[in-house]
Each structure stands twice: as C-alpha cells, then as structure tokens.
Amino acid sequence: MSAVSLLTIEIATAILAIGLLVIGLIVPKDQRQGIGYLATFGLIIVFALTLLYTNVQETVFNGMYIIDPYSTFFKQLFLAAAILVSVSSFDYVKRLGYNQGEFYSLMVFATLGMMMLASAGDLISLYLGLELMTITFFVLTAYRKNDFKSSEAGIKYVILGAMSSAILLYGLSLIYGVSGTTVIGEIAKGLNQGAQPLELLGMIFILVGFGFKVSAAPFHMWSPDIYEGAPTPVTAFLAVASKAAGFAALVRLLVIALPSLQSSWVVIVMVLSALTVIFGNFVAIPQTNIKRLLAYSSIAQAGYLLFGLVAYSALGVAAILFHSLLYVFANLGAFTVVIAFYNKTGSDEIKDYTGLARRSPLMAAVMLLSLLSLAGIPPLAGFVSKFYLFTAIIDQGYIWLAFLGIGMSMVSVYYYLIVIKVMYMGEPPEDSEPMKLPVSIQATLYATMLVSLFFGIYPAPLTDLALSVAKAFFPF
Amino acid sequence: MITLYHYLILGGFLFCIGLYGALAKRSAVAVLMGIELMLNAVNINLLAFNRFLNPGDVTGHVFAIFVIVVAAAEVAVGLALVINIYRDRMTTQLDDFDWLKW
Image (cartoon, rainbow over all chains, first blue to last red; front, side, top):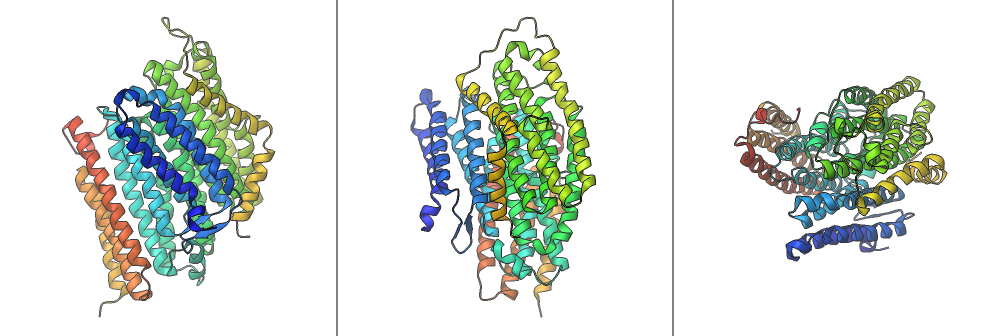
C-alpha cells in the first residue's frame, strides 16, 4: 500500500479537526451545538476506517511511522474514548456558550496527537505526537473563561508539561547520540556495546519524562490539581486517553529501542510502579472532591499498568492493552456521571452525591459498576485485567509486587465504597427531585456499563485479541 | 581543540541552569524562560552529536529544527495562558496560584 493510503486514518482525523475549526467560525452562534454532533459523527467514521487496518503491518517514511496491530489497537481505543467524551460533553459545552467548534476541534487534534504517539517509529515523530497532544491539552485545560481554577490548572499544566517534555527530550538526545539514529527499531542495534553511562542517563531522563506524562509517583503531583481545575470532559479525556497514549509510546520505546538496558530500567520501573500504587491509593482516601478522588485513583491505575512493563513479556504487554481498555471505559463511566451531576447541581463534592441512587438510579449504578471495575471486583472487567497483570508479574517471579498490588486493590475498595455508601445509603436533599438525563449522557452511561459488564463476564474475545497483538509486537 | 565533550558539557550546564531556573523562579514568565534554556541545551546536544559522530547525516539538524518549532508553539500557548491568569488575578507569581492544592 502507498504511504497515503496507510495514513488514511491520520489524514481523515486531521481533516476533521481543521473542518470543525472552520465550521465553528462560519456557523451562526445559535446553531453551533450541531458541531458536537458533527464531531461525533466524524469520529465514528474514522473509527470505522480503523477497522480496515487491524491486520496491517507496515512502516512508512523510512521507519518514521509504524502502522501495526499494536498501534491500531491503541488508535481504536483513543477514538472510542474521543467519541464517548464528545457525546457526553454536548450539554457541558453548550453551557459554556462560546467557541464550541474550537473545543471539539482541539479534542480531535489531541486524538491525532495520541495516534501519532502510538504509531511513532522515530524519536522525532514521537516527540511531535507527544507535543501535539500536550499543547492541545494545555489549551483545553484552561478552556473555562473567568474560572480561576481552570486558568490556574492551565498554567500549572503548561509549566510542568513543558518541563517534563524538555527532560524527556534531553534523554532522547542522549540516546540519539549514543546510538547514532533516531529510528526506534534501529536504536537497539546501535546500543549493543553494553550499558554506557550516557545511555543509562538518557534512559533515566526518558523514564522521568514519561513518568510525568503518565503521572507515576513521584512525578504525579501535577495531575490532581489539573484534573480538579480542568473542565470535566477534558479531565475525562486527559485521564483516560492521554495516559493510554503515554503508555503506548513508553512501551514501544522501552521494549523495542532499549532492550539492552532492560536489566536497568526494569528496576526503576518496578520502584516507580510500587510507589505509584501505594501513593495513589493511600492519598485517595481523605479526598472530598470526586474529581480529585478519581485523579488519585487514576494515578494508582498507572501503577498497575506499569506492572505489565515490569513483567517484560508478551503476556505483560497484552495485560497493558487489556487493562488500558477497561480503565478507559470504567473511568469514562465515572467521569460521565460527574459531568452529568455537575450539569445538574454545579458541584463536584462527594458529600453532594448523597442519595443519588434515589434521584437517578442509572447514574448511581454506572458509578457503582465503574468504581468496582476499577477496584477489580469480579464479575466486572477490571477483575480480569488485573488478574492478567498479576499473572504476568508472578510468571517473572515478582511475587511481592503482586501481593503489594492486591493489598493496594483492597485499600482502593475502601475509598470507592465511601462514594458508593454516600450514593446508596445517604438521604437525598430535602428539595431535590429526580434527575432527568439527556439522551446523549444516557447513551454514554449505558455504553460504558455494557463494556465493563460484558468483558467481565466474557473476556475471551478481547484477551485473544490483546494476546495476538502483543505477540506480534513483542520481539521474542 | 574543541571536541564533542566540550559541547556536551556546555549542553549539560545549560540544561542544569534551565532546570534550576524552572524550579526556583517564582514568576511564571521566568519559569518559561528556564524551560527554553533546557530545550536549547537539547539542541546543542543534538547538533554536537550530529556534527561529531554522524557528519554525513542531517537527522540531528532536522530534530533540532523540530524542537525549535515546537518550543515556539509551546511558549506561545504558555504566554497566552500567563496573560489569561494575569487578567483574573493581576499577578504572575506562581506562589499566588494556590486555589488548587499544589
């Protein structure tokens, strides 16, 4: 296939993003909510296009860009997340009342950046994808005008995001210097003279940079603030898709480009994952804001995803693929409830969720299932994916890490149950009435709930897919 | 004779100065300037490696040009957000941005 036909998905996404930007400017102000529908429709078409590429294994532009089952899996994940986020943000964006076209356009650009990140076959395209994603998120984070929290979150994200990019880039420049190439697939050949100090330094800088991007402790401190301050649909997208994109690139870089340093990076990744799991789960306990609670829980989930890298096996990569998919759907379910609740009440405090089960059984049920899936309770999908992650590390002999993970999962059940207790046991406020949800929100809630339930009860098709993708990706 | 090591040491120094500025400065604009220094240290590294280790190749140059372009975009967005928050709070001192627990 020619380069252009291989890049159809990316080109279509870019056209969609630019088209939304233009349409947002020429459509009259009172008709702009249609742009949200247009964005969703366009994303669904692009998603359908990706189905044609599931078994393609090609590189274009001399290895700059890789289209393989691994990247296509992640692209489908990002697109599914983008579709669900744009559907659930119709009302939220309408209430903002300004620049609706730009909001969706930026969201599609961020998706394009994630796709480039998952497909990057070269350090340059990896950096470009990363920055396309991050810079768009800077703008989206500060999207609420005259909201102090939103603009504060924006400036904090710019400073920490730019700093982590610079650190990552310094690592990439050292790796380029030692190996003499920027093509990820050829770096391993250039590095085969054993571990030199410069390589190790580069690897450490890369891990620190990506540690920021996927918010692994001790580089997580930006994420709770930014998750709390950003507009909730942006938080949802940031928490699920940008983290999965960071993992897609990190796994490719460590497994394909730096296998010669595996004995060194595995130790660092192990320490990071243990710290992240412990820290994320314990600090989540005292939180009173639901967005901050979900932020800490997603820090903890990043720790579980790092387990798959520690395992350094096809099963570990498969478990990362599986867990990131379920993490996306469970988190999106929870965040959609938060968006809908904010649209109705204007509050993100956990205490205001009291009696939600009686005001809106659907919202409470989705929140319940999503949180239990994140905690890893059977028969929900989160149980199966955590089972695979723990199996992968036990296979490699890291039994203590598996025990740590299981123990911390129990801690997570505690703070998830606090939210569930407030929703189900609490009394609704005196003057409250049942909440009527818009069709778009309902559709998102049902979709996320079905995915969490279906793949929990019948995970075989997804595990087979994840394993075959991981086996094709993993070199040995 | 100036060798690769001189350039790498210069890059390392510049990176450390930039990192110190980014971590120690209180003004958001000064922090962004520190980050620019870090990115320029990366450019020095890339060009030095390209010049001394792969003289026939232009990969390092291309990478450096991309870094310059993206850094410009990044700092443009960063300064826009600084103006945005200045309009709200009448300050650009990072210590004053404490509405969210840091």
